[in-house]
Image 1 (cartoon, rainbow, N blue to C red):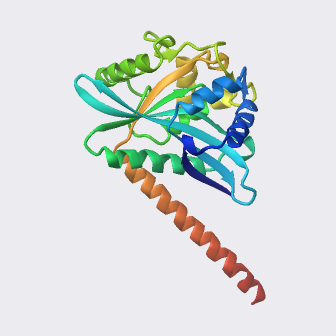
Image 2 (image 1 turned 180 degrees about the horizontal axis):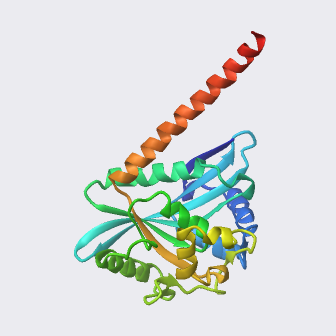
Image 3 (image 1 turned 120 degrees about the vertical axis):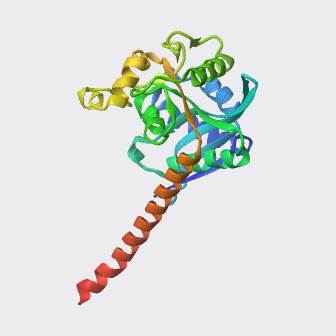
Length: 255
């Protein structure tokens, strides 16, 4: 059983940082501890995913809150940094639920401002977290990015990554510059390409395996709140039904 909890970056100990880097380096090539720590310390918060029984860290995701002024309008950004989950726990939902609780918490503090999740994606699994959960997100296979949104994306990514952001391709040209996913982590084969979202990711970011990153945004809005609340309620009901089933089965066996 896994438990996800958000912590401030300042509260993470040096021992925990080393543990996080060890997990990170299992899945990324060309990783560097000093660069990892510098990037880690530049964020505001981190979601830690731990085994409830052992307390061992099995995953994490770093987060930073930002503000941008674009066309005279202030927009709030939630930027995701390094994110990784131990492959033995792929498919677990604890980290996802904690993340959405976090972004909706930011939205509650900025009800009258546009709030966006800013994501750079080295692999299709991270892109699917956006594409499968956000109603309004870009870029996407089934529609063009609106000019206003694209303008905001361009200005935001240029501000964050002035040396790496490519205006023409809408990606970070970081291939072979920094760390990149190891070959076994997010392979794209024929099965994956049958999914139009993954095929789109591959087409837009063909050098993802070398480290290029697709720049994306997802709008945090009422629709996301409703979907998150519905999934949380469904999960709670399912857990309760499973517990009830576990209680009733021994009783039925005795009868």
